[in-house]
Length: 221
Length: 95
Length: 93
Image (cartoon, rainbow over all chains, first blue to last red):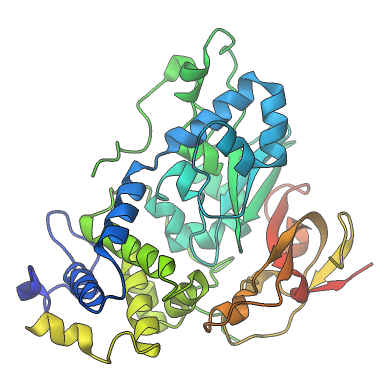
């Protein structure tokens, strides 16, 4: 056992940098017990961790970039995103139905899960903390234009904003609009413009001239 | 009637959205993976995980971090099913 | 599948103490079937260890934001979509 001498100090406190909450030792104790009982196998746990750390928005970005350059692929993606992901050799995850939603000049989609944190983890990586936060879950449905403003996105008045509350078994992925001036870019260059946040609908795809590092940190184990 | 604590859509909450990024800590990945392993062994399903989270006392739910909620749910559901004995995790931590 | 795309439906406003996936803010609201997804195990029994049979058809239902939030401050055309199981819907035509 490591860390149990700290257990009385940090119950229910948020994670502090360089420190661990009481839950950390508790999760390790739970793993130990479940493995001892033969309830779970260590290999299953390791495999799942490996899978989690291998997931990133780069996979979703590949789907979007392909849809931008190949209209027929885009139709297949909109019809059945799960099959379209498999077509590119990507893992669409366990959800039986994955739905891609296309942003256009007149329609903008924003995804939330008000009840918990449903998210296309297989194609986008683990959800950001803000996606799971109470302010986002509360306001994304009732004040979505206000939420978008917090993210620095102002939609024109004639754009129809569609908020999607993923309440059940379906996972939703937004296809952001292709930025202007990207006609000369190849598929790989285009996919670099597709940020995680743009596939949730709280951002537009990056513009070439203002290209900055991705909004998410590199995911390492 | 008060809405259930997890049913957040439209709750009046003025706090700004904290957009700071945070890489999952080892214990958070482990909590996620334990649920994955339990699902694979059919010792738990996703709806039970959600029910366990939703059964948290509202005060605890509000203050818990995301994977603290998952931990609470695993302990609740596994104890209910007899996979864990009541207090077994506490006893292990005390050794 | 009891409902078809384009049909007007109302979300049941009943209270349900146990686990369920119908958000409170949509209860009693009227919208339109946008997609018929498929049938899925019923989460209300899965959550208590059952297998969720019989499966329940799941629909994507679209609502006018102004119908959902009386004081909605966005644009008139803004919409809200959510997945709702058939046993939470009633015909509103």
